[in-house]
Image (cartoon, rainbow, N blue to C red):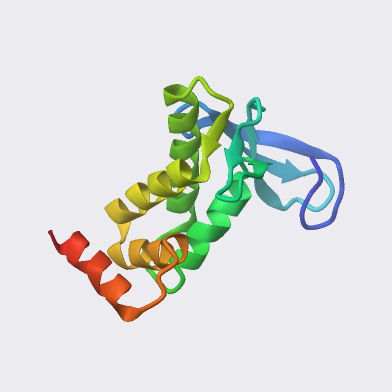
Length: 150
């Protein structure tokens, strides 16, 4: 594993732990060359799941794209990145466990993301929903906020 500090490829594993409910391994490493410590994650490579978009096109489910959307929705909110990464992991697991299909609709994915966001932060939920549901006026925001209040 290449050191992020000095780019040396010589490192040793100091500690390994199950991470994300056993779906990945978190390793603490120490660079042999510079002595700096860093963390790596190892996860099982899964079969690709395709997302069918609104226009009918397909793309591979991209966890980084989901995470970027969550990060945008939670800007200036007190939510740690680790919590958002956990949400992405939960979404991947839920899709794989509850669907025998290798394809899902983007609407299913969007609803799943909104359900998870709603549980942790209502403001982030409304931000995400405004983009996902294409709010085009203030009434749309008010309607969504009224739904949350109930």
